[in-house]
Image (cartoon, rainbow over all chains, first blue to last red; front, side, top):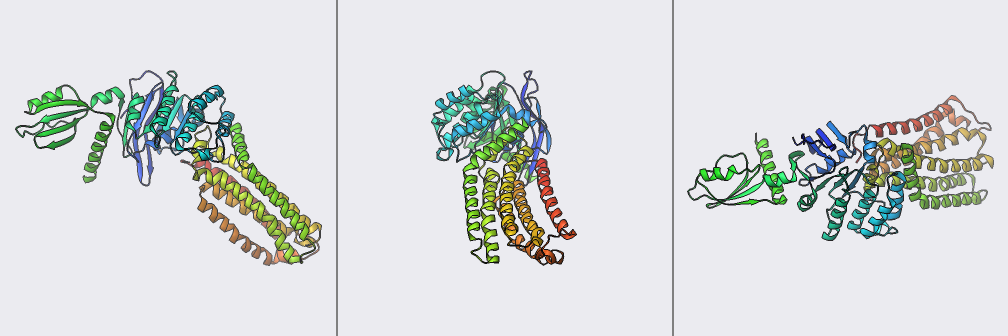
Length: 309
Length: 229
């Protein structure tokens, strides 16, 4: 569905047809891939399946079917080799409350030969953290920054973030996003992250994948994504019927004024409305948030149709 | 790498639990001291019951506290996601938890068993005929702990672990009742010589077999788990 077949660069992640069934949720036939050196943002409402995909990629959850390949390693068989090169930060990940940041640093250092002490100390200063501080007294932002430090200082090739900026104030959010971007030092480093915050995704992603109800709705290069969606403001002076275009994702009518949200936009679309006797007043680009809402609206409508059948 | 990560996880748990272990070791020493002070000053059966409780309580409490904090709380407090994001398999995670908990309880159990045997037989509180009986009781405690540990590892749930402990609490008197009144055991308890008859050997062998099989079964179940978070 959304595999980038034309890519020549080695893939950071390649998931083919992965499915996972839970009593109240099913991840269905997910294809997801992106090349090394890029950032993939997963966007979707709560319960869409973002965390399940990330946990499958981390080898923490085994899919019922499909194949998962991370940095060239097949999961779950080669999960140890893959996990040596993956850094994972999740919003619900906690550190040991009774211990200090220094304790956690020593622990990670004892496991990874790749631990970069100098970089860890730079991050400590940059993120304004104190090695002697116990996790128990930390704010949420400090906890996220600490897990980020522990992950980045071991220099993984792939960073997987599950809602890293959820619950952070704008200043800490910026710090976290900056450090995420700083970690992309060359074309071998990649990031896969999920977020509700479309601004974060828009800011740092090269590819965007929309998930809803356990299915991937759309997955594209960010520029194509942003280019593909338009809002058309029309005036329907003579009460003509709208052309039946599959591109139309949402229609809002208020008297003679009509607002359409269109996907896979091309320049022939306004002409088709003009030919149908409608006046095209404006063509606007959408923000990622508006695209997200448009996608959710379409997915809900499709689900309702399927349920009705 | 895998051996080294297991040892690093064991080391991490030990460092986190060392103060707790130290405190309970001191309490156990104090309990031994109190038991030795009570010897000869408290009548026979009262000494036996009091001594048994004083010896077993700190050791078992220590083992349960360590089990809860290193295994059950790992999941309850979401630190397990942090650990499992490291290059480690579920089997290695399980082995590391067994390697911190089992030797700790075994060491405490061995000390209290030796102390109990010293008081019971070295100082002549019990006749030698009850050696198999007392061995079965202490082995029963070991098996009960193993079952609690395995339940904790498999379910990582406070309620299931507490349920397993309740099973131990209720099961111990029932077990004692059965072996105390089972004729092949009962008939030699007050005798001057220890008798390892087929009934005694069967019980002890079953206990050892149960302990080993529960540990192996737990490793197998953990290894087969598809989802661990």
